[in-house]
Image (cartoon, rainbow, N blue to C red):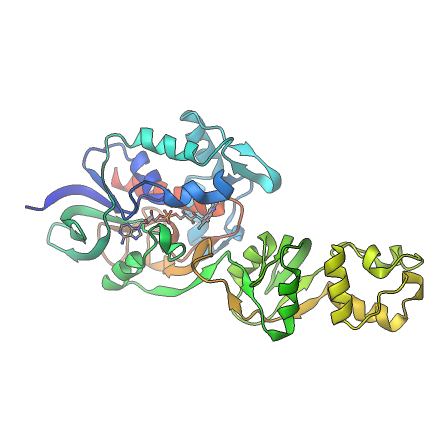
Length: 380
Ligand SMILES: Cc1cc2nc3c(=O)[nH]c(=O)nc-3n(C[C@H](O)[C@H](O)[C@H](O)COP(=O)(O)OP(=O)(O)OC[C@H]3O[C@@H](n4cnc5c(N)ncnc54)[C@H](O)[C@@H]3O)c2cc1C
């Protein structure tokens, strides 16, 4: 006979773990995950130190319906998240750009969850394959049999990093109950380039500070040239808002040519770029690498293109490299207060499966935790 629970949570990732931890009544909850260990993405996040949240969080940092995102964030904001972890012995440290990281390792976050979840039943190494409904709730079919519940929470994340459990089950469940799933795409990911920018690949390994404009957004930060194209924090953030078409890169932010025009040193030495990058750019722009005093007006003009280098990326590095999935379950079909579906009673969606994706800097875990909070308050 099928075992029945009050609540089944699909996914022991950031949102599922926070939800199960926040529930007052844990004894009738089942957490299911494909992976044999909880929080596989948390374990590899933030370079192994998990960027848990950010000092400055608002709906501006997210791609998604503003009113929905802000209402969810307001109920369990970054201060509440930090306080919650601090009460459990984890004091994240503030690093650059308001980002909070674990002092030593992401395992410190998982340790908190392990302690919180001793009373929660778990089926790890178990993949959910199908959901059906009964009069009293849901039947969850897995590759190890079926279980049922009164409430079902879909916390199964997006499509990125399938090698650590990601699957499209959340989107399938949503569609099956009549939800709109907004087009999915890899985001927080590097760009591949077209033929005209193949010379970027020759600069593989070089990293430079840039400013990237994509639509109405401007991101400062490092750009990393790779053998596939471009990556690095500024590029990853730009990818969140990129919908085909052009981006514009300022390769010389805050640099004033007037400061070097009288110099007798070579241009490639004076430009605030790694030498191999400066030399390659000069060649591409057909500017000879002369002492700055000898550079013609025409050449200075050509050089100014580096302030607004505009091109259309060929695509992205894809889901295997993307930190998040853009798109997902349409927010207007979900109650922002309870995270329950407007289409099916007792069905909930939290975390990345929703059509909300955050910028780099701890915003995605903040989203996962905040959406779990609303759901927990509703379930208790
Ligand atoms: C390399 C990397 C680094 C990142 N670093 C950061 C960071 O430092 N800060 C930050 O804010 N964000 C970071 N992110 C993004 C962040 O990890 C995600 O946005 C966040 O984990 C989403 O939480 P979630 O609970 O919605 O989904 P997930 O954490 O992805 O959890 C979903 C869970 O569902 C399980 N699942 C999926 N399908 C099934 C199925 N069919 N049956 C059973 N289980 C299933 C998966 O195994 C997974 O464990 C990073 C992402 C990556 C890939």
